[in-house]
Image 1: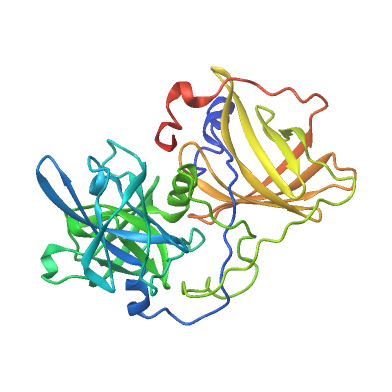
Image 2: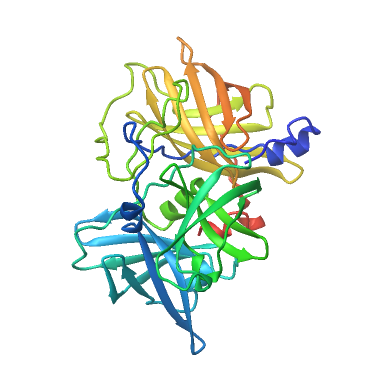
Length: 372
C-alpha cells in the first residue's frame, strides 16, 4: 500500500502507481470495546490432516447466513485437506466438517476460505474486517487462537504492532503455529489475519487484502460508503451491531460516467468506467515498456456528483479515492489516500473522446494469479 515511486521516471510510475476499486464497508455506530467473550464467538479452531499428520490452526468467522458460516484462515492451515474440521467456541468438543472454497496454495503467507453449512450454534458472531484502521508501529493488538505454548485452548494474548511492509503487518506477541489463521484485533476489529509465526516477529495479511481475496472466492459483503474520515475519533469497534441496508439508487439525471478516462497528470494511465445506476465498474490500463496492459479492476459508488471508491492494486496495495464530477461531466478531480501510510495525493481525470480500451492484461505476468 505504498506510492514511494511516485517521482520516478514515467515508465516506472506507469507500472507501479495503480488504482483498483473495491466495495466499501458498512461500519456500526460508536460503541465501547467488544468483550473478549463475544470476540471468541467469532473465532474457530481448525483441525486438518495432510500426509498423515494433524495440524491445528485458527479461523475467523467473517460472514453468517441462516445456515452457513464463512471462515477465513491461513492457507497452510488447510492446504491438502479439502474437508478440515471446525470447532466453534460454544461447542468445542463437537467439530464439524467444512469445505474449502478458496485457497492461495503454495504460499506460506497465503489465505484460505472455508464454508460450514447446516445447523449452526445460535451464538456465533461474524467479526468485521476493518481496512481503515491505520497502524504505524507501537499499537496494542490482541490475538485469539490455539498456541501450544499457552497450554490451554482459546488463548487470548496481547501483542504490539511492529510495522508494515508490502502486504504484511509485523507484530510481536507470545504466539506459535496454532495462532495461524487467527485474528489480529485492534479496537475490537480484525485488522489482519495471522499467516506466519516465526522467531521474534509474526506476520499478518491486512484486512483489505483479505476482503479482496474473499470476494474473488464468492464471499459477498454489503456495499456501502466507507466511514467519514473527516469526523474526529477512532473507527468504532464491535461486531455485534446490525448492518445498514444497501439502498438501491439511481445516478443523477444526465450524469453518465461510462467511457474511457485518462489521468491528467500521467496520460499513460487510463480508466474504463461502466455505470449501472449508482454502481460503477472500473478497469485500469497502464502504458509501459510492454505496451498498454490492464492493471486493475473493481467497483465504486456514485452519490450525487461524488464518486467514492476503495481500491487494491495488482501489487496488493490499497487505498481510498474520492472524486467530484464537473458540471459538464467531462472531468473529475479529487484525491487518493494510501490507507496504511495515510499519504494523500491529488488526482484528476478527463473523459476520452474515443472509448478505446487496450486488450492486454497482466495475467501474462501472473500478478493476479493468487486471486484466481
